[in-house]
Length: 345
Image (cartoon, rainbow, N blue to C red):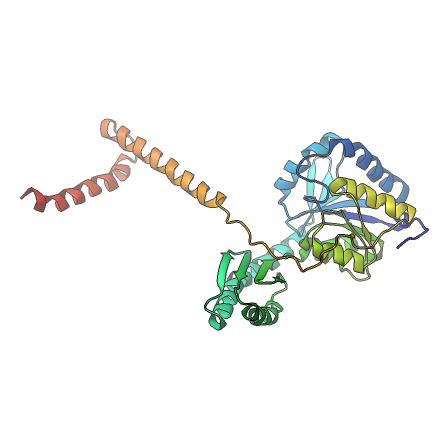
């Protein structure tokens, strides 16, 4: 789809995701200066603000954005953890207090509901098909595998109905696989709130994202302008195509720069890629996360080392709290001694 006018001149808020959109697997230093000039031009010539909307915490955002900051690249606003709004100042970040407190309350309530949701969905599927294989189960995701296609279709019908009751859950289907994921949809709410706060219509917003949690930003009313880099998820490309946005031929930051050029020149391409496969590809179950278990094991090992050290010192020295530390050890020795008495006789 080609347009002849400079749509970029009508944009008052430019919203981008961070991971997968601005940043790939490594910093693209060769693109930083180009992007900095484009952002500065957008601010200077059109009076637009730049907003980074990320699923990371504010601390996590600071870490990954450090290379860009070295090049003088910094957004006007940051939306952290999909929802919490901060204004960028020279001295730090100013929170949007009323909104952030409200979102904190809503997240707490939604988190309680989601903690009960996935176990309920698992029981609902297994009650109809006890031979369904649960490949992966966590607080954020539930993945089923079925040997029989008919059984998979029955389970899909059950899950489609039940998932509708939860705004943060989404069902993905493929032959033999069903994947229920927690997909935050508060990005769209936060962008809408910030736009209202700044007096910007959603029709004056350009959104660029690559992941499922970015889709909510592309469904605002009135409709906003949309775009995505070439590495975007299947569903994101479909959402951009439906809204006649630009699907870039470049990934990550290169794709974002291409988006700005496309909206400036009116050369917007909303066609899906030629090698498009849609939803027919098989779903891959997520790999089990071992980091948390490894971290707990390391912590327990450190505690054991500290306690053993205190026991050794306690045998030779007297220090405050020695009695409390030595008591479990003495009790254990006495218990073992009692268990050994029959053997001595």
